[in-house]
Image 1 (spheres, rainbow, N blue to C red):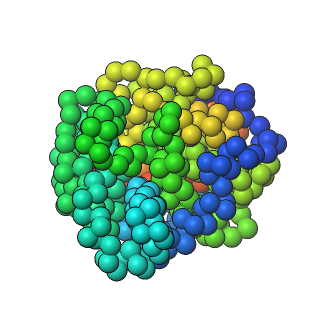
Image 2: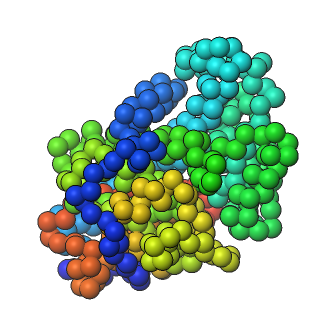
Length: 396
């Protein structure tokens, strides 16, 4: 191999995973190809929808001594610079349609919603969530699109730039002094007190329908990937995880689609926020306490989404953690790629883990990487914090 990529990994192989397992009705009740069709039909009708690009990172693949790296680039999605644009706004859409159906007796079409004719019935509806930035921006955008009010909770480490981006969509943003998981609890408590509707990507006991709709929104990206790959099936998918919603959507969609031919699913987390890996090691849901301090701001989560775990507990083949020093070099490499790709710090975790693993013989063997491997990674965001991007990529 001609290049050594930085980063340290802690690899844990999930003994409960088995590619021969049938996806099954219980998991299909959460996320399935059939359910995903509605998300694609809905989201593809939104103004300015277009499929995001799937890049071939041939130079990086050659340097890593693997056959191919496919990079799904979400840096321009709906102008929100993140795949989260698909999830939060779709969940807002489904809530609004169901809310109006309860009032009017029929569920409005997307054309009717987008016409603005129901804004008078929605002006006092308040949607809310906690966020590291990208999910909240999507919820705020969806609320503005349909005429709802929006209140977003952020924790102490969310940057001012990400706060301003949500406020640009008319959201009221409340900053708490605790971490992400504490902001989730505060948002939920205040929603109960003030009759707000939580649009969360995190599920918990008694709250699963809306997070499932968030994950279904993400499947639009996956349907695009399948079309862009044509008949190709990757051997591996390296996907980053916070609470696990995206990882579960990726695993569930491809598992339902490809069955026993599905890729090897490798879940990537920061070292300080590895709630999925800890849960896999313990064989049960496990909470990570503390500051959850990581440059990968969108992945700074200490509690696993329950419905995500129902898919990942047997669907994810490997759970790995990634050190912080791997992030900036991968962002720089993508910026210098031809074509140049803008990637935020949470976007590159899967790519950075793949490159670090491929360059290290024990990790390479542990994750089954060979010269024939075709790896899919998801570039989940662009420069959602422009100042931090400039600092990490250009030293500015």
